[in-house]
Length: 201
Image 1 (cartoon, rainbow, N blue to C red):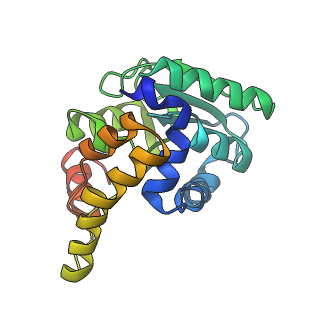
Image 2 (cartoon, one colour):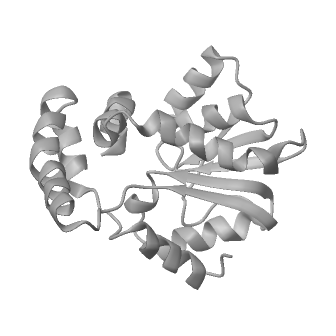
């Protein structure tokens, strides 16, 4: 499915986030910047898709940036974008639940809008922690359901009814299927609870 929508994946993320995803990625890079000031630092972007967060990290930090994703067409698009911008980013095909990197390799790890797509959220968090150096910093950027009752109902209607219809028109039939399959964490605190259970501080 991701291979089929790879050419329009960026547009799909803009639709999902109300075009806020660019700002959110800049905030992630800002949070990690102080930990990635050394030219010897390394940061891994997991489920990197077409490379938007990896590119933001490259532009905002001095670290060596590595992006990984299981979908080769996505990685090919990411590599073309990086080449066009002359960004020295390494893209590696890999499974987020079994990352092809040794323990404690990276000073920072990120995952943006990818945790929801994993068959095991706990397994994904465990892998992020495994490849992170002791004292390193991880950032998870993800959608969650609002907790305010009225807004939660409106959010649910938008994402289950309006957005699949709009995505089908703008991006294509595959996008409609993708949106319908999206799983949301109940809240940010639920993801935090899972992270703590995996040994994150």
